Image (cartoon, rainbow, N blue to C red; front, side, top):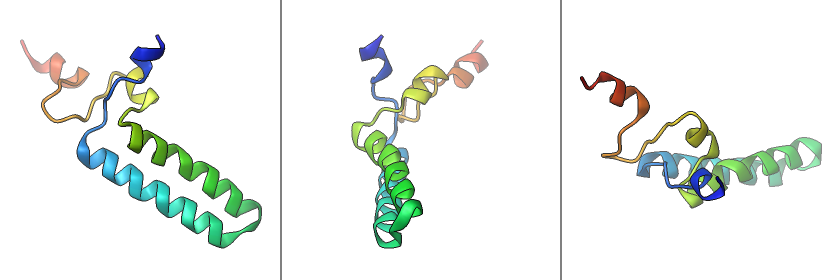
Length: 80
């Protein structure tokens, strides 16, 4: 179960956007300071971590995959 949860399921664009969003939230949180700053910095860790790992646990639960050339559940349903 644990290894299945962390299989790579993020494509290049998805990983890049998550990394940028994560770094932006962390940076904004650091410069904002206070409670809001801490919350934003902690929330920014999630997209940064998933982008660096190349795996999103929620994508696994919903059987999504943005890796180029890999089938997604909605594409599999269209093939007859």
